[in-house]
Image (cartoon, rainbow, N blue to C red; front, side, top):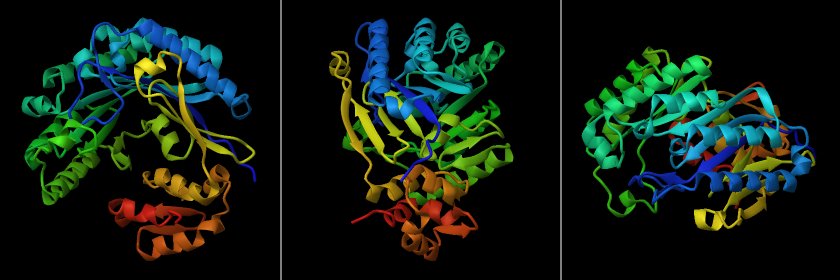
Length: 386
């Protein structure tokens, strides 16, 4: 059983934030004192060297398709540090000619010179966590910026196009505490007016181990949430945005290459506190791994937390769990190439999903339906093995 190797990406996690947001379940830590930028970057590079050595038979001549520097708040790091990091990574593993390099930025840490410095240093795409423009909502979300700063950050990103920035994303949330339909749509309209090439529009969900989990806020009811989505989707469509994933919209040609690679069951190396990776071998082995979560342990050189091979029985679920987040058709040949499974191995499950109206079978593709999008969890459980 052989596997066709998918594109290879790299995720870099920077764990520090100015403060922890009450809804956030990401591996982030409030800044206390001076962030050890230089030391942490050396640990990132050592971590990457160990990964490349451990999986050298899977890497060989592969080049990076994309890099995503997430957090935390990576824009707390200086442009000089980010430039150095990217240059060193390029020495260790080659870059595709059209590599996409994204850096997450908080509008509260935005400066025009900083954004231009990132772009000059190799960053081709910025992702800004705006979430809302309304002062009361930003306060409840624990955000450190205001609406004007958010709009200023977008202007900095637009100006950075002159020095190499090719795209930017605005992160926006809806279904916020005590948010009306009108307030949610007002936020969205203000974001659309800024004309970002890419817009991620998420519904707030309450996650375990967050402040909101222990002290739940009052959220809009299901009918209000549906009205927000339905009307918001129309606003985005009318403005020329195409929905290509559950929460992602872009103008034509500006889809996020890095996230597409995740959802298409691509491979990705991962360095930094609590990061997660996946790597495939041509002999059919596929591994998932994660890194030590806390900065103290990570910066003692304890990088790898765990690594497991994805068993054959779990591969269909793992593949579709990612693939059915996308609205594009799923090629049957890609399923076989990336999982090492024969398409006939899921005939029963596919038949049940078609019967329930969750997917359609079109020639050599499977296509998720509108009903499948609405009942995604139910669709995925069909592929879970006992």
